Length: 377
Image (cartoon, rainbow, N blue to C red; front, top):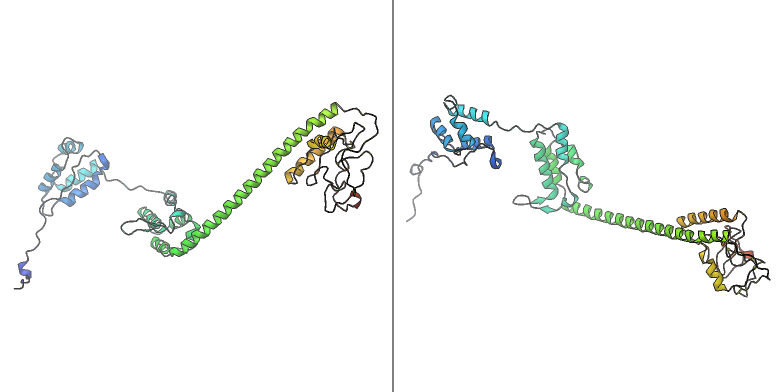
């Protein structure tokens, strides 16, 4: 047999609430973030609609923590303060006035909005936001909107400061012209995630390229510093030789000059009288082997062909002429600095340009427009 459908007459009307809802006891000393005005509002909502003032006052006293500040205050109230629930509410708010919202200046409001920084790593990244979640930049937009509206910015004056905090990866896809905060949030939400993904990839490539450039610059700087240190060491090693030779010159020994210091290639003419390896002039002295000559010339400064090396070379030249004079003649004891970029001593180089070529060319055949200095030649 089917169950009969109840008629409206058989349904009893909903009875009104006649028991108060539970609320925590009130202490009145602001313990554990207790806010008196908020508690009083909760207390009023907990009372049934049909409660009289007498029942409301009785229930209020029951909600006070015994022995605490609020209970002591209630005991000390006058009869006029407890004559009605409205009078009690007025006395309560005089004792515990409701908090006032902070009045921020326009500059302070702008600072608070700009303090909400949107990080690049949050743009286009799905994050937990409530039950469904959302993209990090959308969560940020809602947060800034609530902050601004909470400070009373209904007209949207703080939208422009908020735009200053948006990285270009997102800002490039926004119109950046809004009259309300809801328009701003809607525009942020409307940016496709695929565009943000591409923008992030381009940004990563650009940063990688910048890192490579910075690394190359650092390596170049390190190489220049190392060349300077090596050049300085070479200069420091050469200076004692110059000064020692100046103080203790080797006396000339009368003898027939000998030029058998270095084997001369058959296709290379002998050097002119008094000349030897580039950068030195042999004095009359006992014959030396090629190895001994090259050992003596090992202290000759020969810097790399870089800006730093050329600068050191000019310093060496100035030091040599200051020590031996503008017309000084080089020797094994007073070797002349070699120009950066020229060939090594004794490598079959041309005495005019200081370079080696294939096939070998002689100074009489040299057509270089940058001859080396006379003393070096």
